[in-house]
Image 1 (cartoon, rainbow, N blue to C red):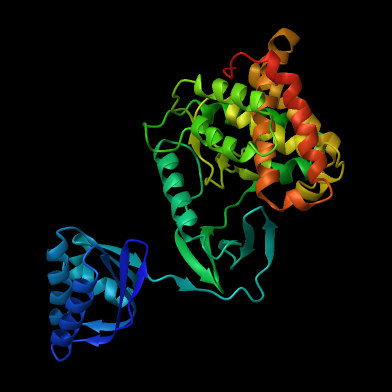
Image 2: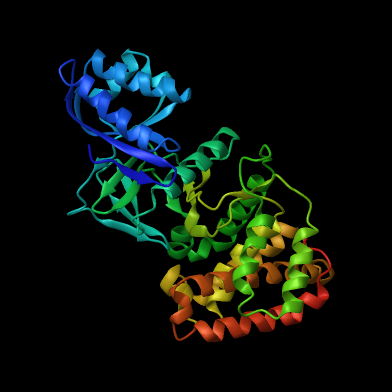
Length: 391
């Protein structure tokens, strides 16, 4: 048995048919491996397991009794899953199904995003393929976040399968009879005001949802994590001021999507629905508004074609979306209300914008240095005027 070590676990591949004929030898070999690695938790890989009799199941049970906790069985085929369910082993082990492999040849591309590409699999389903080979933990995390939000009443699409295409993983969704608000406003600019109003009201309804503590990360803590990267370009006094403002925020468990731009909001027959839930967190509404400012304003500064390239809309429309939703969200046209709020939004937006530029290939683009310089200029302007990040 060619086992491997993965962090604090030892991966044990089981192959072929495991019956009374070979179960004793398997148990002997497993005992040798586990004795040689006493601190490593065993994980059984059933990718090449064809069948397992009661004798094979007793081998699993013996190892499990040694650890006195559910152990992981990964790459469980449908046939093996049925055996484990019938025998009750599914209650004693953590089962991870074998990931189905798919071929994307001939599948049409629906859209591209920062982390992956969406393909149409057939008339009823689509798949989002992530562009990082090590994306499986992120996919699982996003599925769990989406389920938690759905159970709290937030309309969202739930992935019903995880698949593999080549070296990359993806999630499969039902193909909804829906369009994104971005597509709607691009194709129906004459209806922009009504669409922005509907979209903004949905944003407010999402922010009204309160999660239980510990379900999602706090947006405040996410931003505090950005600061270690931003030390490279931000003056110490700006960093200290930003950190102080963030730490002064109270713990807040109201939902924040983290990337609420119109490409991530669908308009369905039953109303608006959120997608791309990997950035879900909790906190003040300012944390969603800053992300929208990044999408619709900051990326367009110095690059008038950015909105057309990324969103398919002119820069003028991007600015109109921001200005309209900002005023509607705050229910005001009064500069005395809007200007202080905008300073707080810009401060956080520049922190996130700098983090994006410094940690992605944007940094090496011709606009990278320009964007860094302009973000630092904005911070120099707004930090002296901001005493709290609460809107």
